[in-house]
Length: 366
Length: 208
Image (cartoon, rainbow over all chains, first blue to last red; front, top):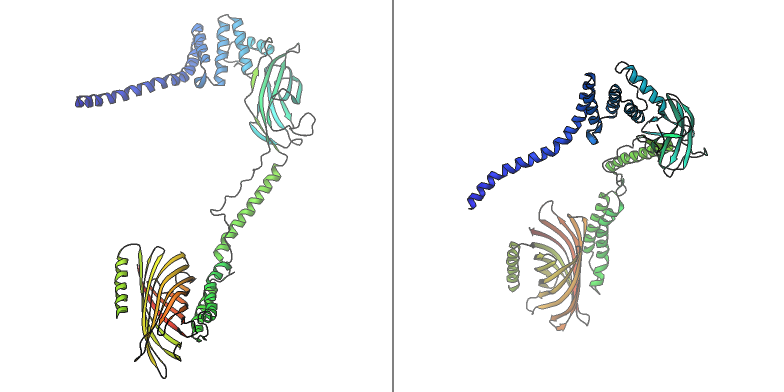
């Protein structure tokens, strides 16, 4: 029975490995396929549109737009899919649907303009009408920068879908207005400049998270869109100059021979010399020890003195002096770099911006 | 003769001990110039030579030391043989400090007279200090008797002594040279005493 079980085990092991491999493949393939399917569906949808297969094109383009997550279309492909879908719906004589999709395209990408060589004039006209009726703004700014508040400014470029009025403010996360940056009309684009100071114009806001909000108004003066870009105010960068690499060993060594070891070798010799002079008199009471003891005592003392001298107390140690010079040079350079970084970083604030989002308040539109 | 047998036995024993692990054994031989000032029966000053041997066995902190020596001392009018020995056990209380316990004896042998023998039960300390550490050391050893006796005239006695000097190790070899001065005195309550001092040159071989 054991032999049969062992044989069965040998047969089962490859089968189990194969099964595990198939399971892993089954789990991995859909996510890969989804990513490829979105772009493939877009390509097929565009081809169907070119072949005037509008039903099929609409289905494929919607399928491409429906893919979410890692397999989703890029922002540029979303715009491309949407404009083809607008054209498809328009040519299918679904004008309301085409307008709604065009509005969606404008809100997601206010800068988008359809290619006049690719799309028919009726689409260009529809898109233009929707664009004029759909005020929206998108912003671009450097992701990470530093400015000296008051004397320098950070620039944020705004791009509008159409001419309309906007109000740009920097707000704290609790809604408090930190600084009103602009209020007025915007044409194609506009550059906002913020000098890094609060409304009082005296100091920068405390470090923390803020948001640049740009409200788009319709002709009646109602807010129809809000573009919100996260802005993080950071303490000024301090280490703009690199610090020198530390030496392998940054511990200072004694530059002169210490006195301690020399005294430690001198002491036994001296004590023995003193002992020779004193102890025999104490041990042999009533006798006068011979002078022979001084021969031994003197020898011990002389050897002790020789040992003391051989240690050369307070003599310079050249290797340690060179070692310490390297460390002192490094420390001096490091301190100098830290000082210069501190001077350069004084008064600076760091600014970091995030990806903007466009919100449409409820009950407003288009 | 008995003493010679004892030393030979000790040497044999220490060699066997060294054959076992954890033991360190050394042997030494010394020659010394001795001066004896005796104020027991008459005031005399004698001088001469003494040759001695020693064996030291060490296990961890414990030490056993045997020394035996004999020599001949003379003056213008007298001559004596001098025999002395000690059998001590010691404990290394600190790396530089030893405490010693054990008997020390000295016998003066004069022709036509019975021997005069001092016997002491002693305790002592010895200290060492490295002058050139591992190569040259100085040392000092002090001892004093707990009890003692003199056989002629029979009387309780006391004694004390000191030895100090220099030990140097021959470069990278297990041989040590010792240059030492030693003085010790046995005395009776009535003031009679024998004082022996000497300058010794010794060589010691350490088995490892």
